[in-house]
Length: 235
Image 1 (cartoon, helix red, strand yellow):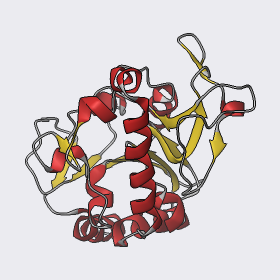
Image 2: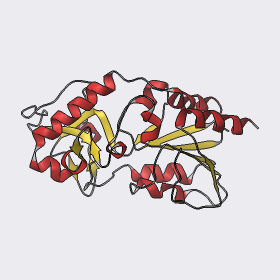
Image 3: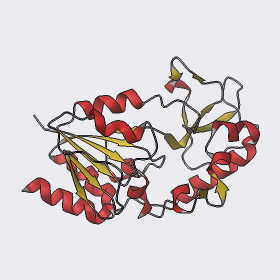
């Protein structure tokens, strides 16, 4: 039986592939205010701008490739039962070869109709469409006649897959956290679900506001930090 390894990743994993987020520049995301393009209120105010924004993000992603950190995480599947829980909306973990990825905040290459979500059940996976790197615009409709929207969990919306993420962390023998500021909830609190004896490793170049006796900090960027972590596992 392989040990279970849960890997929680954030923007820092994809940063070295050239994928930027609003946290890179004082609350701006490619010169947009985050509340305008990453909140449900922003969608209701100006859906055309939101669609254009994510069309550009898909164009950027089409030209991006997994980096050494993504590949190192995927390679852990040789020796461990790995579940990746990512806050990222890109598909670089899958492109690197990871086979079990939980996207907490949605997926950039997918869309769904605006009427696909309800508070009790979340969204219906049957209504989620993979569009790759294509664009969507106002007037592009799902088969049920509803406007298509990005398959993204915006600020102000529930996080339907958080229970799956909690299960992955609770059952893990080892928890690895890579490239996340641990400031966006509910993802930021996931490490607290790790078992009392579960070792936790955090890779990030910045000092993070968490204190827990189970944590080993690896203060580095994701690519070099993953080298260090993999070396520690072999000892």
